[in-house]
Image (cartoon, rainbow, N blue to C red; front, top):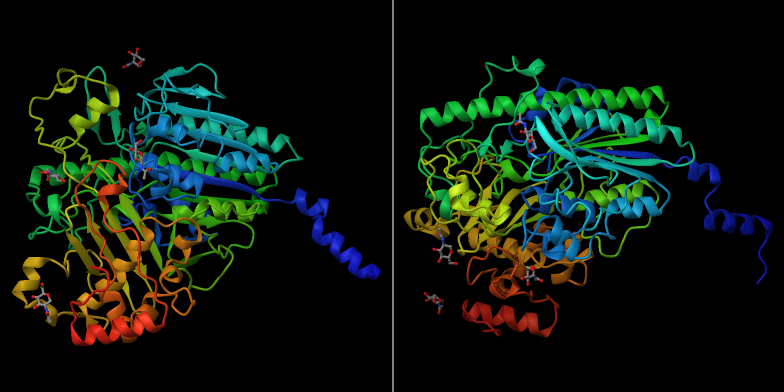
Length: 606
Ligand SMILES: *[C@@H]1O[C@H](CO)[C@@H](O)[C@H](O)[C@H]1NC(C)=O
Ligand SMILES: *[C@@H]1O[C@H](CO)[C@@H](O)[C@H](O)[C@H]1NC(C)=O
Ligand SMILES: *[C@@H]1O[C@H](CO)[C@@H](O)[C@H](O)[C@H]1NC(C)=O
Ligand SMILES: *[C@@H]1O[C@H](CO)[C@@H](O)[C@H](O)[C@H]1NC(C)=O
């Protein structure tokens, strides 16, 4: 075959991107805060963030973490894999923390490594993972960074007295320095360093600890609100946590241990309001850093070629659902996190409120923007940051294993005491400084959740290790106080009378349950296109399509998500059915449908 000159030139251009294009690869910055809520509108209290990212970029209001706790969420974020695939499901060994990240083989398999290998200079400042500590920071050193300054345990959450390792050197202690300001200064230094290398683009992560609570072990154990720079101490004195319907509700909400919580009294509510004020005040240092970063990019002429992402590892609740300060829950407060993006071609001032995205998508998004191929083991897909339309993916699966860890003076340390023992190898005498601390058994907080948002629906569904189920119609009940599957309520209202989307509740729940059945163990593209695993012919891509009555019998007979017991980690043997039936549309499905008409209880499988 002979090719004409134009075809040869076109082929050559296709095979090797022009050097000018390669040189123009964008810089990418991720600002990752710690425990920052979206639901209490914390970003509204950050004027510089509003000016530089909200006004100049796109806000994704339906962005989620997939596991509402620091280390597992960060591992999800930096690997592009869901926690059931990383199996880093806790903040400390045996189920999580930096040591688990290492033993699961991720030292060489995370975003910074891939970015560096593709020709980027890579930098990280702040908190990487829990249990990344004074004793293991070099076992091994974290790979993949041209420059780094990592906060180290056990002082990671001390705002004024902490240790870091700079470029892997032996840790240095900083006493009397404000941690979020320290992070900002180091970020500026690395930005200067990056600007000096005109050959390579850079990827930089700024991970300040704000607004995480201040947590110190000595001289006395304290797990209180974040501490604040003196210049911000006077702010927000009149602020109160929004009194939304889920705020310390009269009737308990949620299931299992949450449904058994007593109502918070006025002393606790006042403490919690001040706790949230401190969080907002601590975020002011981050707000200033955002402006500092933008100013430096502008000065070095790189602002127009830099994407800036702003997000948080997980959300936060305070007083909602009668909860003391904390995360780890499946409510919107804990899983919904801010996501702001600005950069070349990203629409300015746009708010996307019906596109669902998650932390699983961020590594693919960043790889894609850098012009790198996507990895087959990614469980997410690039977020369409340049797209001005308000449509896109509709589901995200969330998961959690283990205990809940209430924070603050009145958190009662339900799980904290045992947690600290495991975490620091302390004896009870070491931390029972406050004899008021109650120490009941750790609560079971293992569950699978699902958010589905489409044109006609906005739903949350979850199955707990106790086999309690939650279903919230968030178009009517955005604050998740009316669990449609509450067994007491269902019997009170004669159950089946309730409908959702014009269908019987159980009929809708069957579909959501099947979706969790796929999501809870999905890998790769199955997590992006879960309906395809059930409908391989590709004719069902959404909940609304799956709700077609012709599939009722089929979904009624799907194995249901369930657990045989509550475990603190991902032990697959207690996690019930693992495989969904596939709709073939063939003789078997027809028979199933007909049998179901005769006997709704009929099952070929049981
Ligand atoms: C700061 O931390 C160091 C090392 O842990 C400790 O020796 C020192 O006493 C602390 N300073 C204060 C003011 O607590
Ligand atoms: C946690 O679940 C186990 C069963 O898996 C149960 O025996 C235990 O009582 C539960 N603990 C609490 C505090 O609910
Ligand atoms: C996850 O890790 C834990 C702790 O190492 C282990 O016991 C468990 O079997 C692992 N789960 C899976 C599904 O591999
Ligand atoms: C189906 O099973 C339920 C629960 O076992 C039972 O109450 C109901 O009568 C059964 N229905 C039929 C049609 O057999």
